[in-house]
Length: 200
Image 1: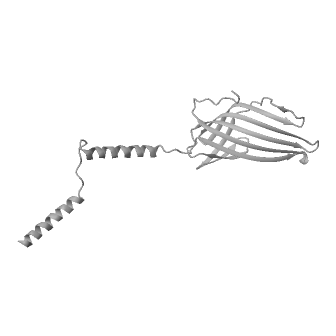
Image 2: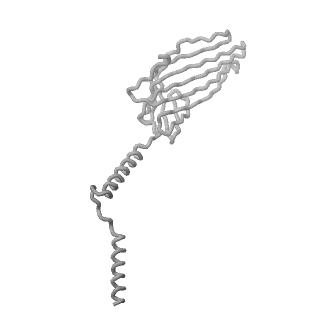
């Protein structure tokens, strides 16, 4: 009798172990466990949607309001004069198919010379800015149609682009020297947003 009890206990234990490894029964949505499963499924769907909409630094197909600040220093050793000029140029810019185009909005400047006067003449209208670009992660290597190049950097979500470039050149056998710093800031907009001219 004792052996029979042991055999029955072993068979019962075996059946319990098998049921523990079997698929759990499907809970009805009306039961507490069923409600919990529905909430878990909804949470998983929301998490997946957030992962699918993760921000990207890719600028392709995006539109920006571009503000370029140009600081130019001119020195003339032959008559000991100098000049400092600051331009602010705004453009509506688009990245598309490896090309960059910036439609002119405004160009304003301040100009200081040796006579002690700071002038505020109107800037000249500038042709649209055309360039090509190669993006590697957060880095943009830009080659302008006129020949110069620049390196810009993009925020992780692609909404902000910034870059600086400093240059120096000489003319007239070194009697005229020019130094410049260009600072680009591009803020993402959409195609319907305005990029107002400076001062408006």
